[in-house]
Length: 302
Image (cartoon, rainbow, N blue to C red):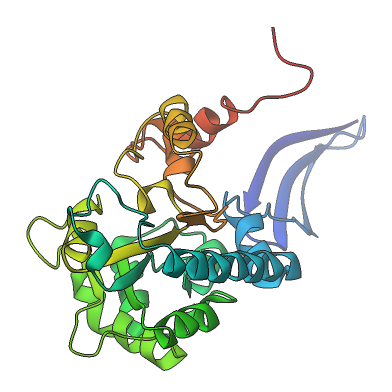
């Protein structure tokens, strides 16, 4: 009879060394203690990250590139319509009484609208890290993002038609120099003697909600189009529940694809944080569970 008395496992990574202390009882012979060692291969689980498919899609899928190219082609058509219609504005609540006499402008978000930040997210995923504001600022300040397909061509064509191009971004003001350098290096039109890159905290009242910055543009320009990847790129009513966000979307149905043009961002945004009330104090696992609870399966659950 062979009896295993104790088991000790040494090491956490493959290969894994396993040692066993075995007592061998052979009847009339004295009981012998034998130490058995064997090396086994242990496969580690791939770390989970909710951004994996989204980042892979944006980096590798030609379908993503075709989508953004098509969206910017639509934006070019809408821009021509807007220039031909003196009453056209994407921000009627912000424009003054005589906005028709103002020079034309368009407002775009930066991240995932004109700048592709997937290398930052890919590094997070491979390193098993969550979003970190300091590392994000380092990335933004480095000025090495590539352009979202279609964005450079569209903005350059708009500028050639006399349209001022503004970038209203929630990148922190500390990243402004690197962001401006990045945009210029990619060929995006900049403002010359006009500050067209409006960052968060650049002025005391410029927080995450963008209307204070849109208002600055609306004072001197007729805003023809607003382009972004997040509901907050069009309205300040975005950090709410999924149901409230749907109501905001429905209330502005006549603007989508016309004055307001949205790009896809399946990686992050206020849509992703709405299921957990935009409260990042929840653990990653709790946030994932709250998102799962928002899924609508078939057949519907009772």
